[in-house]
Amino acid sequence: EENYKALDSYLKTFEQGQKEKFRETKEEILSMIGPFYEKFNSLDIYFQIRAIENSTNIYFDYFEKAMSDREQGVKNYYVSFYTGRDIQKYTDKYIQNLLNLSLNEGMELYSQVAREAEVMRSISIITIAAMFLFTMFIVLLLTNKLVNPIKKLAQSSMLMAHGNLDIEPLSISSKDEIGVLADSFSIMSTNIRKYVQDLKQKAEIEKKLHEEEMKTVRMEQLVKEARFQALQS
Image 1 (spheres, rainbow, N blue to C red):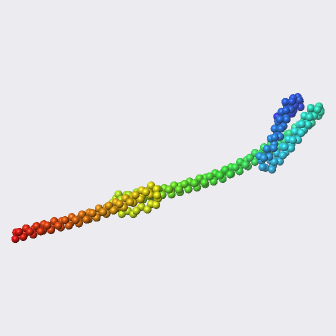
Image 2 (tube, rainbow, N blue to C red):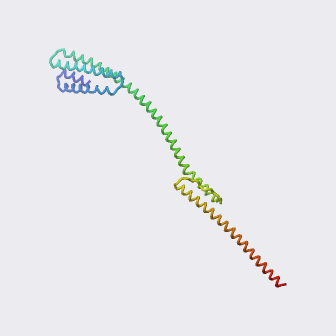
Image 3 (cartoon, helix red, strand yellow):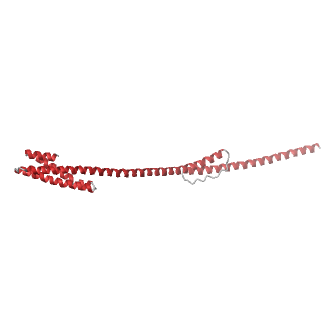
């Protein structure tokens, strides 16, 4: 529209500024058409762009001829001008058709992107759920690996606290601090059991010694009584 107004003003006033504006807007319009071919894939849109390009080149030819005729004083210069203007109106229709087609293609593209986004959302949810389950499995595995030895150690300690010294050695294969603690506990329980057995043996020996001592004292008393009886006799 700016291009048309600049041309119309130049044909009426011969103002060079309007002629320069017409040429500038013309170059700008022509440079805008080419990139449209790369932005769309539809065959219908391709034909609309081709129609816009062809009609634009044609009405610019008529506009240039109108300018040339006007500058040369040709009286019917306006014939080329209005012919170009009519073609320009057809170009406006092609542009409107292109806009409608591009909107439709944009909606199709949006629908496709929305479907892909929904698929990605489902995949993301499944991936997150799988990662959560895997993490829970690892946590349970580590928890069992850490807690079960501690439970065994606590149970053995409670048995020892209640006087049960016949405890089987803890079978914990880990080499970390819990494994060292379990080994130390097994050694401690074994030593305590050995000390208790030694105390029992010592008590039995002392008991036997006491019994032998009592027998000796009894024998001495019997000997003394026998001597006394002998003296009495």
